[in-house]
Image (cartoon, rainbow, N blue to C red):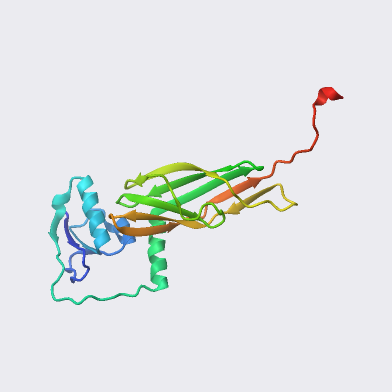
Length: 216
């Protein structure tokens, strides 16, 4: 039976015989409960682990929860742009966001949003930004929560979309942007749209002819 130590502060030196998990990707790859000892580092990962074990009725595997050490001075950590990008990339690997749209003529189009949550924790407070669509800038999605290892599919109206050049009657545009969300009550994350997100715009031409064939 596995034994798990939770170190939310990340300040304790792990013991030698433990599998150390300190990133979301490591959690997904290595937290299989096939090893004897696990050492989980960081507040978010400890919360995810505890919730996952609670769902599977295995909280008894937690043998110790490390407490914050005393006499430690507060340290202001400046997170650089590459580090922020790395965090975003980790979410992009585990929260998959796909948007596919279809627009015809001058009528409003429809966007189908599919969100897969491969995280072991619930996502809420969802906001979507699509760079190519003006009316999708930090748009709040309905009051969704996405449980661990679940997905939602949600349609939305596209009221404004790019106009086609005069020499084209159909065009497909790749979409880029991000989904922001909350987890663990007050923690924030974001994930980029996947590479399969796009919108197809089709122009419907009116010949201008009025009447029907019976007029001939």
